[in-house]
Amino acid sequence: MDATESEHANPQTHTYVDQLADEDALKKLQVPLYRFDQAATTDRQEWVLDLIGDIMPVRMTGVAIWAAIWDRIVFWRGATPVLYDLADRPEFVHQLMGRLMDLEMKMLDSLEEQNLLDAQLRTIHCAGTPCDELPGSDYDPEHVRASNCWVAGAAQIFSEVSPAMHDEYEIEYLLPYYERFGLVNYGCCEPLHRKIDLIRKIKNVRSISISPWADVRLAAEQMRGDYVMARKPSPSYVAMDRLDEQAIIQETRETLQACTANGTPCMFILKDITTVRHEPQRLTRWHDVVRATIDSF
Image 1 (tube, one colour):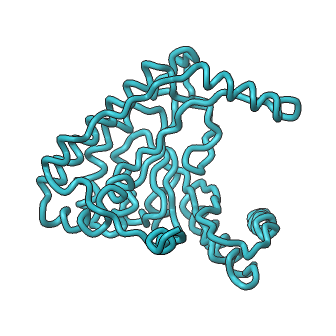
Image 2 (cartoon, rainbow, N blue to C red):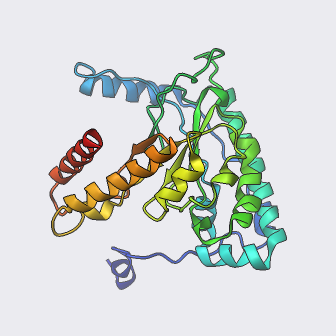
């Protein structure tokens, strides 16, 4: 391993070279091709069946859609040019989003045509999916459509922009895409407590992420009983020198109080876990503490 390879062997941060810096770069974007390899899929299915088929059911699954277009844009460009362009080159950003959404629509068409979508997913971007509405009365397992499925989306870099910009450059472009699906789980780490009214424009949203950086009280007030709050508690409490059970209890109670006062259903999703200090039992204990707090509320 030479000096350069050693230097980048364990990177702690990344700097991205802008791959979509101008209009000429946009012209190079093409629709990714999805092709179903029946032989390879059958081989993998048989391998898994042989491995665990006697102890649990094995089911072939399709594609789960994570429609976080801005997450991808940031990976292609870096955060700095993205945020500057929203203010300095709005027309270019509109060209970029128009081009990307055209490609996304065509990719979704391809998935539908090849019957590669999955209407039986148990989760969509870490949120549970069981419900009565989907896959719907028109469900045909031989031709699964987006309308039979959940989709998840987010615009995490937009934690740094105004509600007006979030609406102009994300919601308005994604609306026609989301409307092709049955139900939507929206958001990830970006604080959305002041943007619930924007999300209401997406008529088929069912659950909204409320992250550790969001105001849970304001979120519950804005959501009322119209959405499920996908509450993301702070993962830091399982990463400290000692598991902070009192902080977990307090955070859980604050969420329950806010949601109960506003008739907002909620689910707790512990994610973005960096470390549990080599003590995986902390996750079990976190669950037990949260469950006991809920039961005693």
